[in-house]
Image 1: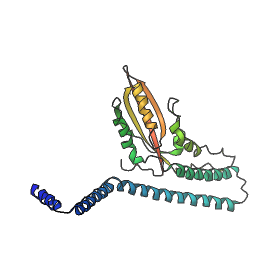
Image 2: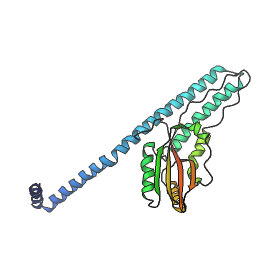
Image 3: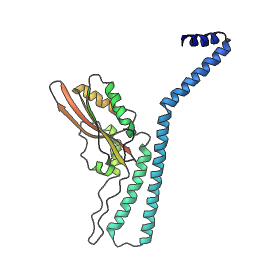
Image 4: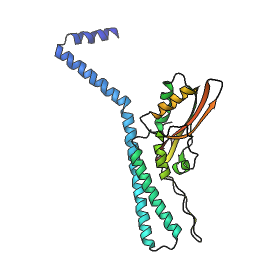
Length: 252
């Protein structure tokens, strides 16, 4: 192996200065291409696939809106007030889903990246110990709206997506006598969540939460429970979610 290396080194030494520059430039370009293929190409492929799936879902939503409009036009004057209200609610819901997805799809963390992201934040906190990291069952956005609110100790800034969640929720209108029973709406957006339990002093746990809030990607906050142990140690259990049009967890 050494003789081969020496042979190539001697070959380079005999080259002129411009030829050496061209050789090293070619090697740098080759290394840059390999780095891109190993580090960025898989992420680009995943992003393109997610965007393609999202466009397909948005097309389905638009078809549903057209079908609702056509059904409403054919029905004429409907004496059933509850049925008309149900059609209007479904139309508004699909429109809100589309708007929320378009507004937040670039800022949301991908479900398959949540574990690595949470572990990376932990690795920067030497005084915070990871106790457990558990994948939560996938939940529909409507069922998430019915969950208890996040305690007041949580910073409200990352809760912007919760506002989108609230816009997609709401209760169906009360049925009128003789009206058809309400139909549960189909879930269009799903919540992918992780429950992380960490241990440390109160101030270190506060710093950990602040680092999560400062991440460049956005998450929906769930329950946050702080339990005191032997002084000065406390245990924090935190739930964080992201939105996805896919029900299944990917690459976990």
